[in-house]
Amino acid sequence: MSIPTLYSNVISGLLKKSQSKQVRWNTTTDANTFIVFFDKTSLSIRQNSRIDFNGNLEECWIIVDLLNDLGEKVDGFVIEGNDEDWDKLDELYTLARRAALSIDSAIHEIITEINKTGIIGKKINNNSSNGDDSFTDDIPF
Image (cartoon, rainbow, N blue to C red; front, top):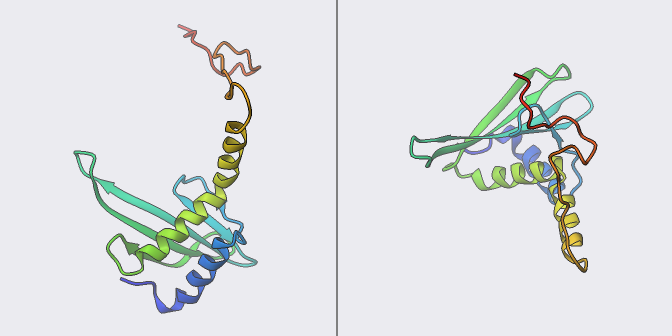
């Protein structure tokens, strides 16, 4: 399957804008789904895959959903890993993921740290030295 004609300009436009970092992609409660909100609609993109019993990738697909202003799916399509438009949607998904998760910023931060003189990286002590009491080795029973 290829991208439906109705969505061709939408996907091309989002891809172009995403390549130039001009789309505000957002995370969702699903770690593999990213969404861009418009005035009265939104569009989400999700990547799923199936792994066989040996841990090998069997198949992969990308789902694009059009949502109304209530967040309800009103339309959408699926592209599978061997479809002709896979590369285009895979790039869009990757760009959406990178933007929503601020991956470029994280990489820049790491590079800045690596280029400093001396020891880099924080030592994390699991005994609450960082002020976070949420982790403890003690089991209450």
